[in-house]
Amino acid sequence: MDCKKCEKSILRALDGRITSHEKKELDEHLQKCPLCSATQEEYKVILNTLKEKDFPEPKPYFEERLKAKLKERKASEPWTVWKRWGIRTIPVSLVLILLFGAAILLLSPQEGAELSQSEALLRDLDPLEETSALLDRESFVDKNMELIFTAEENNNGSNNDTRRYQP
Image (tube, rainbow, N blue to C red; front, side):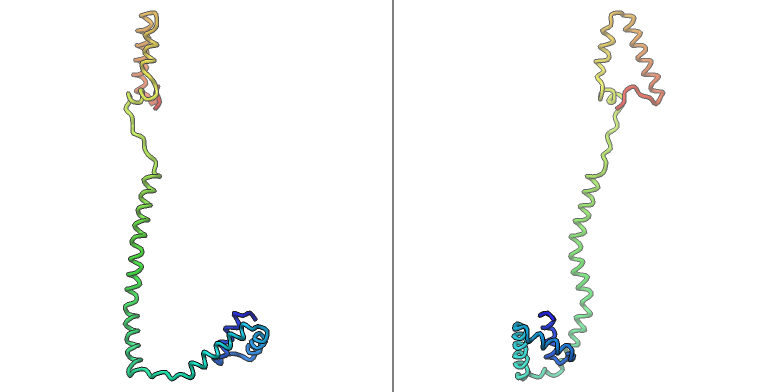
C-alpha cells in the first residue's frame, strides 16, 4: 500500500467505513511508515477536538430559509451561465471574423487589370524599334511594301483569335 492510499484508508477508518482486509493492510503499512503513523495521530487529535466542542443549534427555520435560497440560486443560475459565456464569446467571435476577413483579402488571387490593345503592344515590345528597322531600309519601295504588309497582317490578325503580341 502506498502513502496516498493509506491516507484515504485512515480517513475511512476514522469514519468507521473500512473492511477488515483494508484494516489489516492499513495496520501493516502504519507499522512500516512513520509518516503515515504521524498523519493518523494528527487526524485523531483533530477528530477528538471536534467531538469535544459543543456546536450551537441552528436558528429556527434555518433549513427552510436555506432551501429557499438554494432554489432561488438554481433558478437564476442558467441565465448567469449564458451571460458569462456570451460576454466571453463576443470578443472571441469578433477577432475570428476579423482574422477570417483579413485572410480572405490577403490570400485571394488578385486579378490583373485588362489592358487595351495599344497598352498590350507597348507593354512588352518597343514599337519604335520595329518601325525604325523598317525605315532604315535602303529602298523606298521595300519600305512601303513592308509597311503595307505589316498593316495588312494587323487587320487580318484582328479577325482571328491569334495575336502577334501576347501580353
